[in-house]
Image 1 (tube, rainbow, N blue to C red):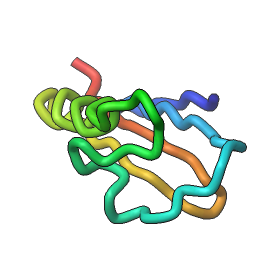
Image 2: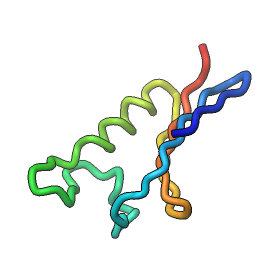
Image 3: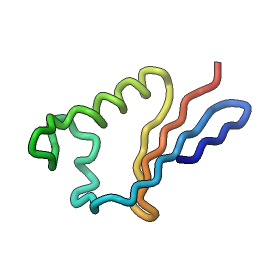
Amino acid sequence: ILASCDNEKICIRVYDNGCEIKDEKLVFEAFKTTKLKGNGLGLSLSKEIINAHKGELSFQSDPKNFYFTLPLV
């Protein structure tokens, strides 16, 4: 986990050493999951909440990590 900020926003980056994400285009789509008991809502809801606060949730494949930014108040 890496955190940084500037005068306008904070950025949190989480590096992922887990299994490969096979279809990156579907990573934020609701009800898409690879887990037996998953419902596929975690990342799609997270993205909606962060967007509602004028932030951004994104994914990079190399190195594999998720990051989000939120504006400072």
